[in-house]
Image 1 (cartoon, rainbow, N blue to C red):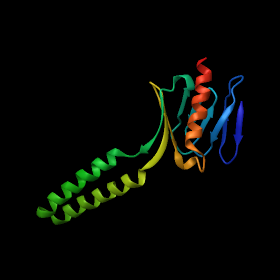
Image 2: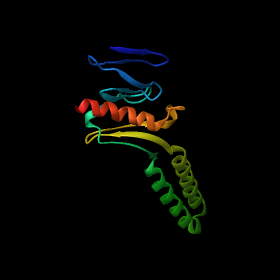
Image 3: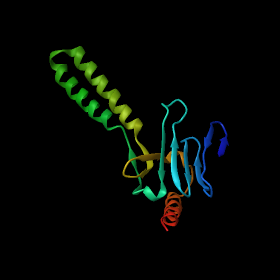
Image 4: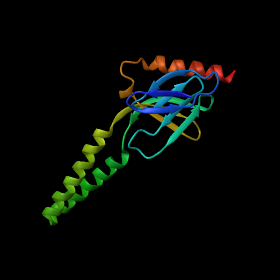
Length: 150
């Protein structure tokens, strides 16, 4: 068992011969030479996801966002504009709600590295990688993945 005892105490179970490649404590993500593992962060509902490197089908860097907030913001804004003609106060309320959803949408935009398998996905926000070279991270994981397939 590998225990990280920083500001967040976590117990990570390592298999025999397994070694840690990266540990992102703030994101609760552990990457070893055999798997990628995400534990729920403090304050989140209990959760655990683990993907074996041999099962990873893709690693991609992309923007992650809250699409439902964009849709609700647009709908509330359109409803507000339509209602402002007939019911002034209700229209302003609709515009206000639409603006809140749009602000939330833009605040929720973040770049992530996503590890995908046919049955699960793990997102690692890039803000937790500090100055790490992302292509080097991906290459190191892919090299370990190729070694596990042999």
